[in-house]
Image (cartoon, rainbow, N blue to C red; front, side, top):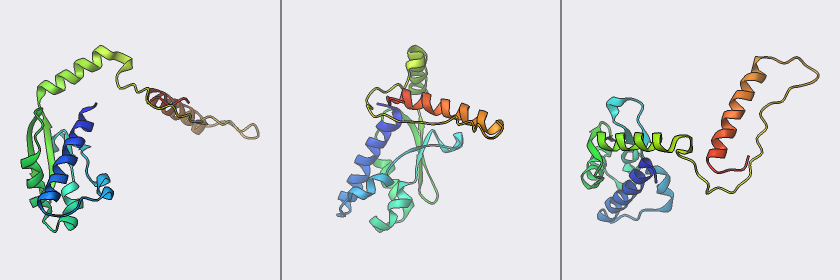
Length: 161
C-alpha cells in the first residue's frame, strides 16, 4: 500500500471519529471529500488536504477548527510535522527516513516499481490515426507519443491494452 493510501485511510478514520464526537452521521457520499493530495510546493508540505473546508457546513464548524481536530487525532508515525494554514488546509511533512526508504524501494524494484496486476479489464486505446486523404502533421506525432505513454501507464496498472 502506498504512502498516500495509508494517509487517506488514517484520515478517513480520524474524520469519522470527528463526526462521531459531534453526534453527526458520516454519510457515504462524504468519502470523496476526505483525501490527501500531493502538495504543489514544498512549503505546503509533502501532502495536504482541504477536507476541513469541504466538511465545515456538514459539521457546522469553522474549517480551521475542524483542521485542528483532525490534526490532533491524526497519528501516523512517519509524519515529521503538520501545520494548518488558513482557512483550513492541513499540510503534512514526511520524515526523511520514510522518503529515503521509498527511494531505496524505487531503486530496488526498478521498472517494476508501482506495477499493479489486480486489474483484469481490457481497454481499447486508439491513438494514431493517419488520414489517408490528408497530409500528416505534427499533431499526429504528438498523438502517437501521448497514446504510447498512456498505453504504458495503463499496462503498468494491470489493464490489458
